[in-house]
Image (cartoon, rainbow, N blue to C red; front, side, top):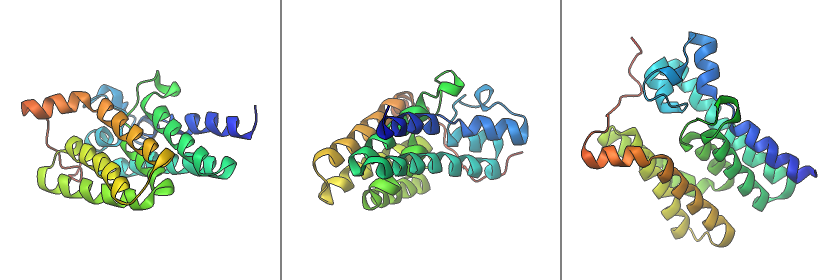
Length: 199
């Protein structure tokens, strides 16, 4: 296996690190899979473990996406950076360390996009923040943020492999949020204040 192959495998293993589980058990003795949505993502970490621990999970999930994308860039250039970034998101959603039940890929994808497509990421981040501020639906903000990255990429002139990869991740995010979409359409989705203190 060459350096590129090793980079892809490493990207999956990095992306699969379940920071919500590791930090939750390590600092609070709490398995987040047994609380809230049971999801190993940042949102459930905030709700279950509180602001301070949630921020650590957020940083960890973003960092692993950035690290994986950077690894691919170093090993083979932009095309491989895109691949390893996508693989890291896949690893986050289907982590080998946690019986392939992870998060929904938002924070890890954001970390990869920061490295690979910073301008498109900025569009998505602004749309995410605005949606969260006005609606308080984290899931809707995540969906709008992903869509913002995709549309931003179109307007910024991305094409070819870059544009295809961005929209692949956008569609994957919508797939992982399919249950949230159903609850949003039914008016049953839970609003959240991620920055409230954990009682």
